[in-house]
Length: 151
Image (cartoon, rainbow, N blue to C red; front, side, top):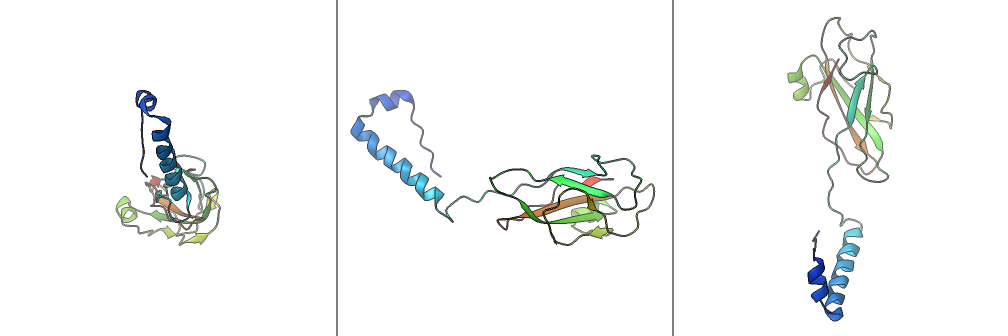
């Protein structure tokens, strides 16, 4: 999109006849930008506020199947989650390589982003697990995975 900036002293110098083409160009640029398919690609942001068992990176949990929650940042009106994928891994290296060696939910068609139950292998006591989530929106956009959280 082309941005035109004219300060007030330059505006005063413009005659009314010189201002009309400027206004028409601005209206035309706005009209073109509003046409379907002409909007710039806005990157889909990653989910925020990753929570496990009501806490941010809890040190200990007392459930065998913890619950995960996240928030979808509002970056455009009307955007909603239509699917998600959670990866849980025993090491940060595996998670960085998108390997959910403890659990991969696969792509789940759902708008649920709170209290999603863990459904993977049995968790071991005194072990740190790493997890991340991504989502798809109602425009078909797929976000990158969120930075890992742990529990």
